[in-house]
Amino acid sequence: MKTLEHCCSIDPNDGRAWIALARLRERAGSLDESEALLKEGLRWEPASCYLLQAYGALQERRGMGDEALDLYAAALRANPRHAPAWVACGLLLERRRQLDAAATCLLMAKSVSPRSYYVWQVIGEWHKRRGELSSAREAYRRSLSYNPRNAATFHAWGVLEWRCSHQGLAAQLFKKGLEVSPRNRYILQSWACMEARSGRSDEAARLFAKATSKKRKNRPDGATWQAKALHAKAAGKLDEARQCIEAGVACDPRHIPLYHAWGQLEIGENNVTAARDIYQRGVWASKNERDTASLWTAWALLEERAGDYEQARSYLREALRRDQWAVDVRLTWALLEARAGAYVPARQLFEGAVRIDPTNADVWYAYEEMERAYGTAAAADKVWQRGAAARGEETGAPGTAGLGAVPGGIGSSAYGGVNGASPPKVTPSMASLPTAVLQQAAQQQQRANAATSAVEQEYGVNSGPRVTRPQPPTRLGEIRE
Image (cartoon, rainbow, N blue to C red; front, side, top):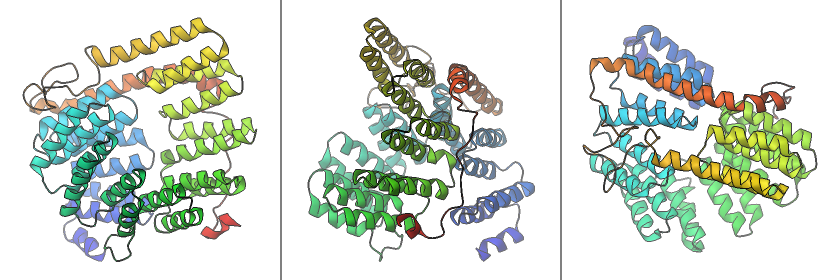
């Protein structure tokens, strides 16, 4: 750290030192100090696309999406050829369900940096999330052709093949990934999970032991301990599972899925009070408000099981405060209202969810099933027709949020844009593109806001008393009294 501070004092116009120093402070949990360092770097170099993007990423991790978008746009205005900023902007817009604008950003990233292994890896992940597996595989091949030592691409591709039940091919990809990065805990974790779910417990235990070995240079993170805990839970070793989760919380206290898994373990043992304490501890520990939406949702379902519907609704309200684009939270809330017999608010919540993500099959199916259970077959048929039409428009009509398709995958001169057009060439006029993309995203956001405003006003998503947040305990053991 002192070396980086010395670098900043020698050449304050070099943004790399400011970014590295800010990341160190962020990892230490000092987000305000990290922000102050990035601001100081921008004071010396206000047009640095690297500093602007790093600042935007920090704000995004803090749950400040609007500020992050503005910073990404500023980075792209400073340098329209900065592919990482295009990627970051695209991924943020995708999380907001603004898929047309997100696709435009990823197309621009590919256009300005066609030989970037990172860009192709992200494009592969985009296709995988949409079930376009051939295109995803082709993107991964492109990524590895530009950087055959990128373990992250081997990992992503291996997970894809595992999910497709091609376990032999997945194991080969994981093995190749470990050849270039022998201590990669993500590959070890995924490989171990695959072996465990295939019934090969001995091989899974060996891989988990390697992933969590104290002799490794990179110590295991929360995700690794969580995976090992779930393996132990599946084998009926609940004490071992708790020990793994406690070890994960000790080394990575901000890993929210750990608290979620721990809470579910305690609920399974009818330790309701312990589960409540664990969820509260997770909310306290997180530095990213958006990440806690899943904890608030799980906590709401726990309160529903206890018969306290008002408390459950208040926790779902907290979840939506932290992630207004969370379709799964709206779906959970709608199903809760349906189970409570409140079909009118359930319909309004379903309508808000399908307007944010009109191609979400799970929402349409749940909506249809609710209408059938309520005894209105005509309404259920109408919901089914609307859902089928929405998915058809999204997948087959011009102007949909896709990255194009060519035989064998994506890329080459036939690589289609959002409207089937070829990617634009990079010219000085591209400096206006970030503003155009954000305008496109803003229009989508206005439509989503208009669709959900009635629900939010009716059920107090943006109003009403907040859940109190007392000071956290000082020791981990205090939650298990």
